[in-house]
Image (cartoon, rainbow, N blue to C red; front, top):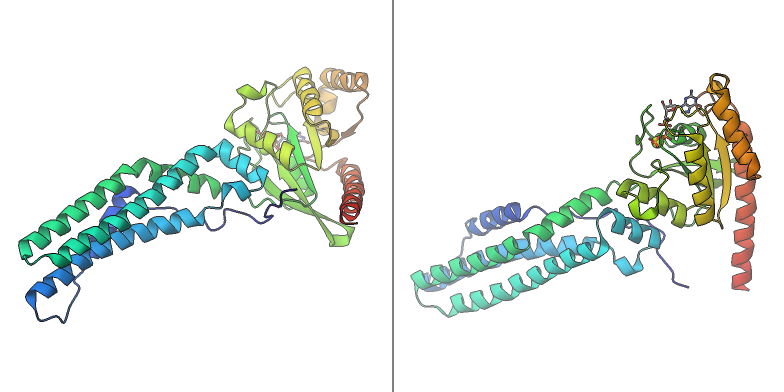
Length: 357
Ligand SMILES: Nc1nc2c(ncn2[C@@H]2O[C@H](COP(=O)(O)OP(=O)(O)OP(=O)(O)O)[C@@H](O)[C@H]2O)c(=O)[nH]1
Ligand SMILES: [Mg+2]
């Protein structure tokens, strides 16, 4: 079995400056006066011109090197992080961009050595200056040629830095459902997570993590709030929804599926249950707990609430009745969640123990 690092892989990413900023920085550095004690004017000129080439090349190649090294190896990444990178940026595109930065770094170092050798052999001031200008021109062209790769990596750093620090391997509950059903409200209620809540769909656009504690604080459970899912095929899902799917597929020990039977979320009960059917099929091996929310409004929406309950009864699915906003029914839900997680944890520990023996 492959062993993955469980720590957050994107905490030390270094974002590159744009190609133009990098060149400006390198030019400035290379023209900073470099004193030499050399009395011989030819030798002094060689040292000065060679120093300018070296310093330009060093500034750029070192910076590119630091950027490339700050990225984790994608092969060693846990599938959740690798697939999330793929959804947000594209692993292949990112790999190509990084390898082009490495290529540029090597080319710039090689060119700088070649041109420095030529400067050091020259006896002529004008020729030395010409060689130095030629070196700078070629280094600039290389940097400009990777301008798009640099931009892609800058965008990647920005996106990857917004990924929450999700821990792999600790008990994890993922809250899923259609938009506006109250998932974030529940996460706020039962965990330390503080997602944004609003009365319009697609308020949550990325994954968000909170925690709650079991066994008097001895066991930490991760709760993940996800963006709302629509009832449609995987091939039509957008980047925001794919993050929710990925959390379900790769992280969930337990899924809480949220239904708004009042339909004030903007989606019909039939639609919400059709998505539930899809999730139960797709993630059949993960334990699923169904929650009907907004109980404080049910008296105004009897008809749809009854339709919803009937559809669930037909499927022999039991459910919890809560108001995430008012806090009713939350204790019973949290108690069950805690009990089921402890059972799963015991089971996992036993399996691990058996694997060791
Ligand atoms: N009356 C009532 N309103 C609720 C309840 N739970 C959530 N809401 C409201 O429903 C709206 C949506 O809540 P959110 O928690 O943002 O819903 P969400 O499922 O996270 O929505 P997305 O992030 O867009 O998928 C907000 O206006 C909440 O105040 C509830 O139990 N009762
Ligand atoms: Mg939300």
